[in-house]
Image (cartoon, rainbow, N blue to C red; front, side, top):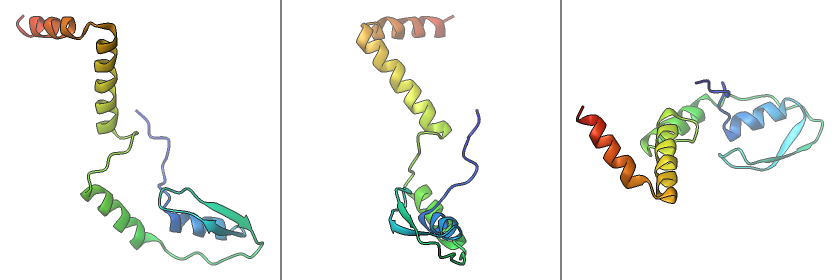
Length: 104
């Protein structure tokens, strides 16, 4: 499995990146839903290391799992299969088969 995103942006790191190219934040949040406008004024970047570390630690404490993590993929796959079995009326049959295979 490959994680396509090799860098995690915080709002502050995105403000730094955009500021280096003449954009100014109009509105945004930590989910990186933001709007920038071009001002032409190049801003000096400041380090967002401390805020990024704090954000990651807080996220880990809350045990928040994003859809692209292995844990979330496993959970979502299991739930999808269970939903499919329920919709097709085959969940009890699948459960019986699973128990039968365990006994072999």
